Image (cartoon, rainbow, N blue to C red):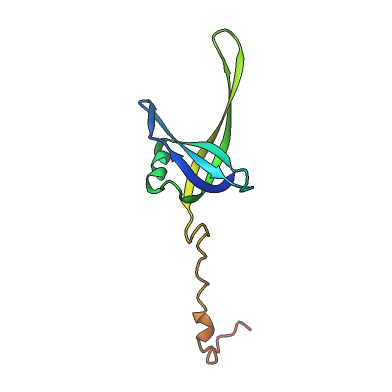
Length: 121
């Protein structure tokens, strides 16, 4: 899944276990600018470092997976948890507009093919 928005919060990386770490951030998603949504995402393991180069207020594109878990507490009650696990964050440039790549080179059109006698037929 992909969503675009503005980074409004970034949290420090948390070491949950010796072999597991996560980092959370909040994205302002303004599909309707009059009523923006604030969506909390998490990054795990080496993906946590992606936030280092992102600043508060930056417009970004976030690629993420929707995760859901079932857990039975000690009293036997079943509970469900959801998380939005980001795996890629791309900063946008030019005032929120994605940079347009340059057009492909047209140098081949300037070549002189008139002397090519190597026809396949």
